[in-house]
Amino acid sequence: MALTKLGLPTTLYSAVGDDAYGRHIVADLQALGVRAHYVVDPAGTERHINLMDSHGQRISL
Image (cartoon, rainbow, N blue to C red):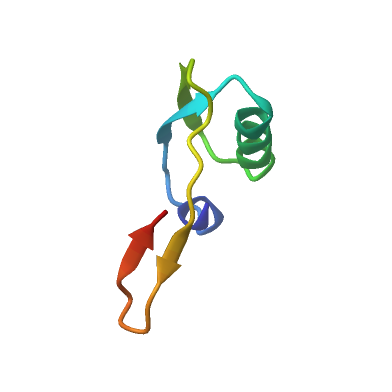
């Protein structure tokens, strides 16, 4: 999203599920003008939380 807002040519390749989460993600990215190609994951859209510490290290739950 940030690169698109800066006007740089970008294309996102991602897997999304055919579920409410996936449809929401696709709609939001389209509204922001992000060019994207999606692969539909029959298991649904992956969801997780990223936590960052004070050193910039990430843990994904």
